[in-house]
Image (tube, rainbow over all chains, first blue to last red; front, side, top):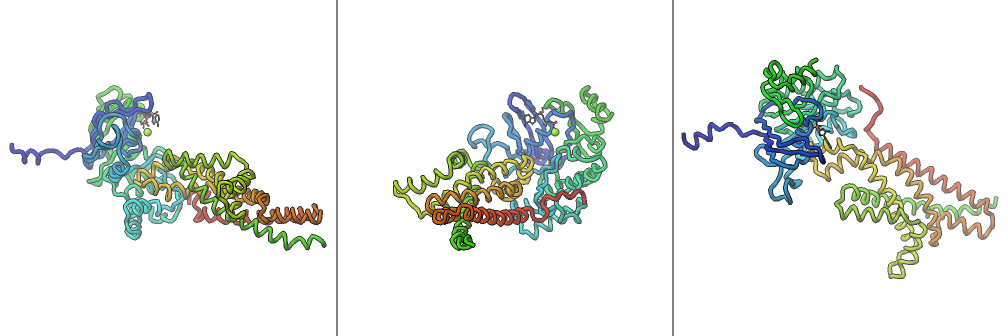
Length: 265
Length: 221
Ligand SMILES: Nc1ncnc2c1ncn2[C@@H]1O[C@H](COP(=O)(O)OP(=O)(O)O)[C@@H](O)[C@H]1O
Ligand SMILES: [Mg+2]
């Protein structure tokens, strides 16, 4: 086989790749030699007991947490620059470059309380991307319509229900056109009757071919429905992973079986 | 009515008090924001400089500061007009207290707000300007209202570096007439009236800062 042919049949490089990443909080090692990769456009769900390190993985990806060892790349771009003054450091400009490809939806929504819904969505495209106001507002109005909140654009977050706030937060993240979107338990803070409206928005996104999604959730039925792959976390490692059908119907590891039995009741 | 004859002089004094107080509030607010933001956002050098300024002016008495700027500084060849000295020292003094208000309010903005800003790729200055400062401002306003009133009351000390403010005028008239009751009663009323106006203005500013029902108590619509 010729060289060129070989390049042609190479699979796409992963958009996210953790290679031997170690993350400590003081004496507590949360991720130990962590290896994990996600393909472009893949929808991956992280499940596992509380404290197993799922949020930490997302927070590292969002550059909200530094890590101590190993290598992490986003679309081939390392999180740490080799010459940024010491190991595992990166300049602000470099981190902003990385962040421009990643968005995050938080458990507690974290909308800006002093801005209307529309401004929450407009602000970052306007200030960070430098879009003209008209264009940023068009984009925001479209996204608010997509999450079903076009009529709430002049409300303040405190005037919305939790489910509505989370949908605004999703629109706000999407307005930056991230290639990777992270969800950290997006429905855990919601009253049960409001979970559905948020899940249906996320379900809509799951059909977007180009968007890579990493989702931490305890909604097992939903995970089974939307993910390409489910990873079961335990003590900072991926204990078992695979297609949702297999993980949920025929888990191999006893820890996975135990966990699923406990959450599925 | 003897005390009617005090009014022209007292009014002129009140004008001086008002001018000095308003100037000190304006300049002090600038000092408060510069030092308060430097404390939170400045690097090690800037925040240390701001800390020194704050502690120096909070840790010594305003009266001694006035005397130092008025009597001691000229000895090394730096001197200002009395009124300029009074405004400068009063501004720096209340600015030091104000910087603590600014620092506290900025630090009270939740870490989640900072993380949301970072996830949307706001830069540090943008986060401060558009996300944290507007939220902190609402938080600061009641304390700033108190500080404004405090500035008015502290301003009476400038009479001791021979500035003809309301207190100074009252003192002179009393020395002439020996009518302590009349003169000081009028003076109290004068300060109280000014502080009422100041309170009202601060309320209006506070309402403007909270404009648009930014943090409505109203529940779900
Ligand atoms: N800022 C922090 N400081 C110290 N320990 C932390 C911090 N954040 C998380 N941890 C610890 O790291 C571990 C993993 O946390 P996390 O990633 O939040 O787990 P999960 O999201 O799976 O529940 C937990 O033991 C947690 O207590
Ligand atoms: Mg978590």
